[in-house]
Length: 239
Length: 114
Image 1: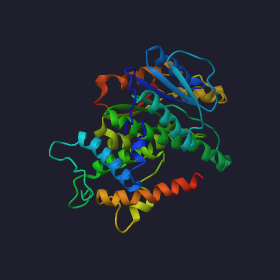
Image 2: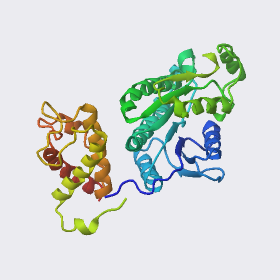
Image 3: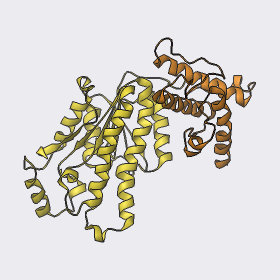
Image 4: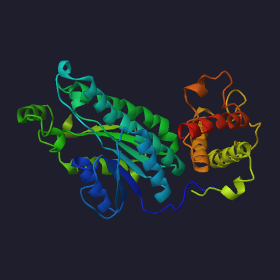
């Protein structure tokens, strides 16, 4: 019985939520660095590129996720990096927030991260190595009004990161998180400019984040020399 | 993932499960310190006062057995659910108790997929 066929030398990186924004950028960025990149989103990939394979799926659907990991195991026999990028936001006063919205946000932001982390860790455990990168937000430590549900879902990501870092350490897997400031993506396009400007004033460095700020932090977590760094949350912009 | 169907045609389901567990044990033994290897025997005590695995070792074995069961039977079973953990006699006491717990999970999986 052989469960790990055709292990390739090429490092394999899975990033979730690659149809747009940060996820799309990261998929291209790491494919260009020579990783075999696996991406997923509800929508089909908007463009074809080398070293990239796309799965069209619902990040909250356990069967979808397990199927994707089965295929990764069958095709590559390894997974070196998981970047749990997929996320949604919805800003509103809590008194005006429907329960359905709360469930959607927690399902995508937390359950999606949990499912992918669990299945990735099973695969990484066999290699005795792996890197998991989660996404939180500056909205959590800044405790922004109007973002109670989004920030709470991302607070859950912080606890999750810190605890599974301990649970997975003996398997050689590190787990860290990045907390970006607002970046010009679809996620914040509906937020009024005044609100974004007020938010920037709460940062030590008062500017919008850029995609390269995010990949810089992830590059740091992925460095071989970073194998002693786990359970950490790194916020951008001096928050 | 190679399923050894020819050989399995002559093997009972119980024997296939036991062999699948032994394959997982081989993998776990590679990670255990010398002298701490699990014996491939139904009587091997896995967990508890006389057990050879610590809690993390048991987690590792359970996940590995699940993966090999998936590979061998094509069934995605969850060994450590609430039911298993609440049983008076834990299915994780010995290799034999684990082997005897798995058929019911496989049957449930087959039924739910028909």
